Image 1 (tube, helix red, strand yellow):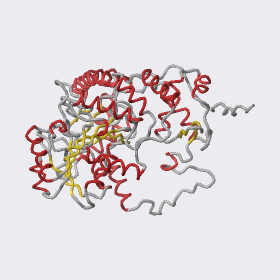
Image 2 (cartoon, one colour):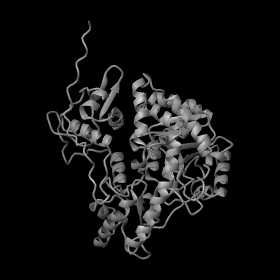
Image 3 (cartoon, helix red, strand yellow):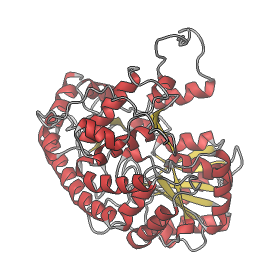
Image 4 (cartoon, helix red, strand yellow):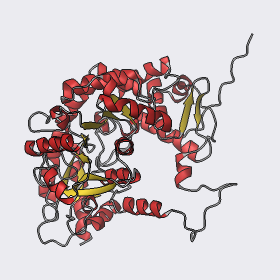
Length: 504
C-alpha cells in the first residue's frame, strides 16, 4: 500500500480572528481573507515560511484557522497574484522562490549584500522612470481618497469565494491559453455587447494583465520605433511610460471641454498614426469627447490607416443618465482597439484587463503573447467567467453605480463645509474621483499638499504631474471616493483640511 504523503506542518501564523478594529471610520475594516493574507505574507517575509515550502491544503488551513475554505482560497489567490505563492498541478501551493519584496528591498542574511550607496544602481532609463514615478504624487498610505480603488466593502465576497472554490475544486487548466480562458472571453464578449454597446464575439476578446501591458503590446505590433503617438493632455502618466517603453515618441495634445481633437493633434504632429484616448471620461479632468470630435477622429484613422486605442477605464460609472456609448460603437472601419479593466471595477488583486480587437489583429497578438509569455495569470479567470455569466458582475456594477453616486455627493457636501476655504470640490457626472482645486490666486503646491496629507494619513494624488508641459500644468488634488464609506468621508476631510491649513 502506497504511504500517504506527509502533511505539511501547521503554519506559524499569528492571526487574530476577532472583530476588525473600528474607530472613527478611517481605519480599514480588514476582511477575514485579508487578515489571512497578511498573516501568511508576514510569515513569508519574516522567514518563518522559507522559499519553496509547501502550504497545507486549503481544507486543512480552514480547519486549523477555524474559518471557511472559501476565505482561504481567496487569500491564496491574492498571494499568488502578488507573487508570494506559486501553484502547480501535483506540487500544491508553495512559497515562491523569488519574492517580490526581495526585488524591491535587499534583505539581510547570508548571500545578501546591499549595493554601495554611491554605486550607480539604475540605468539612465531606469533613473528617468523612477523620477517620473516619484513625481506622480502617489501617496503610499492606503487610506482615504486613494485613486483608482473600487469599493471593496461592497464586493460580494461570499459569492466570489464560492465561485473560486468551485474553480479550485476542478483545478486550473494545465496549459493556460495565451489569449485567456475561453469561458472568460465568451462571458466578456456577452457583457460588452449587451452592457457597453461593444459588438464583438469571443474570438475578438483578449485577456491581459494590465492596460499598460496591452498598450505596449499594441504599440510594438503596429508602429515602428520612433514613430509618433497622440496622447491626451492632461492624461494618465502610465500610458506615456508604456508607449515610451515601446520606443514611440509621444505627442501630448491639449484637451478642452469637448475632449481630444484630432484637428489640434495634427497641427502638432501630422505624421502620427496612433491616438490613445479616453472618450467617455478623460483622465483626470473628466471631459467627455464630443460627437463631432469622435467622428473626426474615426475619419482620420480610416484615411490615415491609423489606429485608435480607446481606454474605457471607468466608462461604466456615470450618474446622470445611462453610461455613454463607447467610441467603438461608432467604428465601421475596424480602427478602434477597445481596452477595459476588471481590476478597477472589482478587485485590484485580480490584475486583469482585456482588449477587443479587429479580426486582423487577433492572430498577431496571439503569436506575440505566446512568444513573450506575457499573458495574464489563469488564476481567477474561470471564477470571473462564472461571476459574469451568472449575472453577478452586472448586479455589482448597478449596485456600485448607486453607491458611488452617493459617496460622491457626500464628498461634495462635506468638502463645502470642511474644506471650502482651502479647496473647491465640484461634482462630476461620472467616474471614481473628483478634482479639488485651490481658489483663484491662492499659492498652492499640489505635490507639497500631497506630502502634507500623507503625513496625516490621507492618500491624495497631485494633478500637476498629469501634464507633461509644466507651463500648462494646473494645480489641484485628485480625491478617489469609491472606496471610502460615507461615514469616513467627513472625518477624513477634517484631517485633510487641518493638514493643509497647517502647511500654508
